[in-house]
Image (tube, rainbow, N blue to C red; front, side):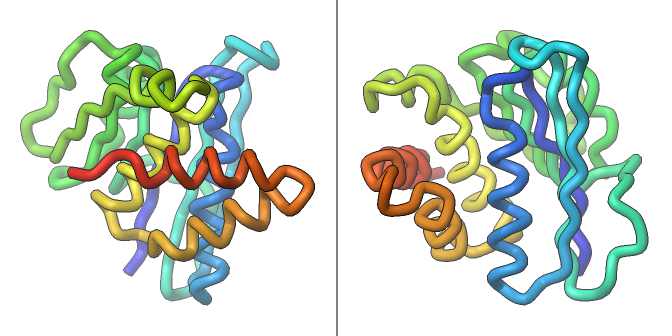
Length: 175
């Protein structure tokens, strides 16, 4: 089993953290993984995406040209990465910022109002964790428990309140 995925949005949306969390969860589960970030020229507001590959056998390259899953946080990301999906792939869209329908009819699409849901939690910064929860539940690439462990590792005791908020956001979306 090898799964290739793109996580994409603009700088400041937590795209890299989301991809790193999936890769870290895969490592916790004893899987092979790669994480390959790509940034636009700006730190915030510019384009940001990463590729993550999760496999049960060694991975020869972190580069991918065809994906099994795409998580798009904004319209430019959807437009760029939707065409990379294999037929039968999974596309997760942040419909808070993407007001255009995906064109493909040979993939499974999920539209999540991540920004609105995060706003209801009182912190729009956790929209990426809502999308991560949807991603994990729809793809099954890693276990929910593994992501929870990674969240605790990232937001250690010094930032325990952030761990609680991120876990709450991660658990918010259910299909």
